[in-house]
Image (tube, rainbow, N blue to C red):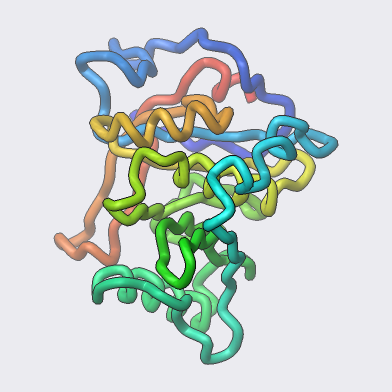
Length: 226
């Protein structure tokens, strides 16, 4: 069963009740967990004190600095991306932006550096074919990456909090899609006050990875009421 979650305001962020659809509940810790989990953060009317409190990076240590990167003209890649794979990810999104594929402008990334070394990034994008469930005006946070030498230091949580603080607008919904077996990323989402809204999988037309789309199969009760 497929379902689309609209961008209407007023859905609960704190309810834990789930709705059973096709014999399964929306439970990130179930042994029959789906392939992908769709976490959501609903922005309020005013700035969220939780996000304001987590906005800074001082708690991580003075050696870290945070940079908000957005493409400017032919400024294709952020400084310090290690490896061809990460460069291709940013190049792919830059091409989509130049071709006006995104539903609106605004894609970019939160970068956390230790000196000149990139330790973490959290990308963010508006709606496009890969995330068809996102409404106009909403954003998806991802992909995210942390240098293996810096994992377990709280950088992913700090990057997510900074992205939320940057993107917060009244009633805007922010999304965070994670594979159901990725426990560290699930903990980051839940620590960041994202709530589990749906579960689903992916479609790859003709087996083409670049055409992949994340699709919702089951929605949680609070999400359906929203």
